[in-house]
Length: 245
Ligand code: IPE
Ligand code: IPE
Ligand code: MG
Picture 1: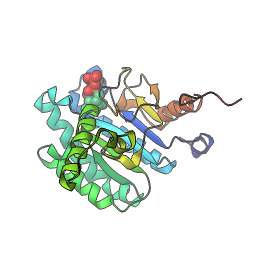
Picture 2 (picture 1 turned 180 degrees about the vertical axis):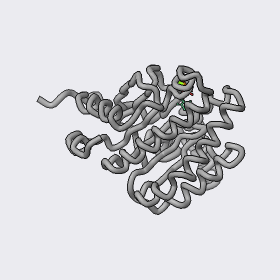
Picture 3 (picture 1 turned 90 degrees about the vertical axis):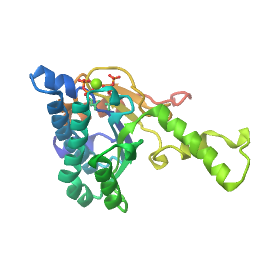
């Protein structure tokens, strides 16, 4: 990917990616599904680097859903091991590039080393003010909204105030999402050919643009990302209003 391409397209402020197709990529090559997740890690390295270099402010990737626990323990443990490896391998460069890593979801419930290495990455990069890299781990959109309401009720209870219906508005709910600072994604990309959200960012996607790519995540690189961004830049976002004359 040449730097000309980077400069010639305006970049969305917040890109969110449903990284799908690792299993099919591996199966097509006669490999175990975990080999697909390893190859997916290499794609993630390239995409994070590219987004950091090209001035994207927020990148959110869907790495493990609250529904992915339905998979075999071999695959689940494989995914978590790969994440630990990813942090080990990439944290120095991420930190050097001023990237701030923010795990989102119920990631701290994950057993073993994965939660610890996410905590380490979050703590180590907390002071960085470049790309904000949200990694959605044990994440579910419905769980996020449920957690937001629980937190609101808890805060009111702790402060001794009574929660009145009119206290709840969209801003208050948004402020209680996992990373409220990241606001809403402008562009949501799903790789791997499926056309659904699979419980991703249900609250934040109200006015996101959706771009679907048939490319399986391990084959997805900066060139494919730029195609998605070109498509995004060709869209007219009206937010319920009308196009300007
Ligand atoms: C996405 O790839 C990664 C995770 C869900 C963890 P998949 O593992 O869902 O790959 P396919 O969809 O089976 O090909
Ligand atoms: C969505 O992919 C979750 C992640 C990419 C982490 P899935 O492969 O789990 O989604 P479904 O099962 O096809 O809806
Ligand atoms: Mg899938």
